Length: 47
Image (cartoon, rainbow, N blue to C red; front, side, top):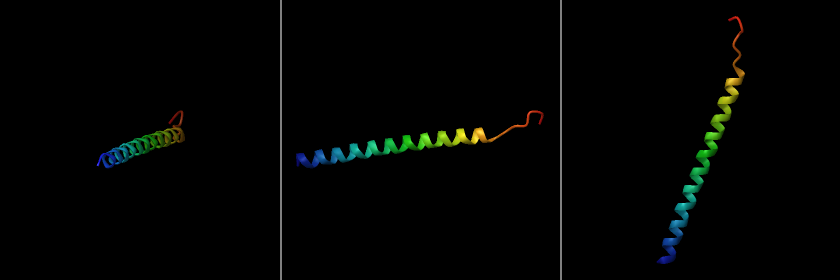
């Protein structure tokens, strides 16, 4: 019974770490794409 509780705890902890890493990677990708979009837009000097 003790081993089962430990396995469940480790599985939950691993899932939380995986979700945190995936969310962080998504935020990094979103920041990079927004930077690229900002650099592509050129405003005319005398527009």
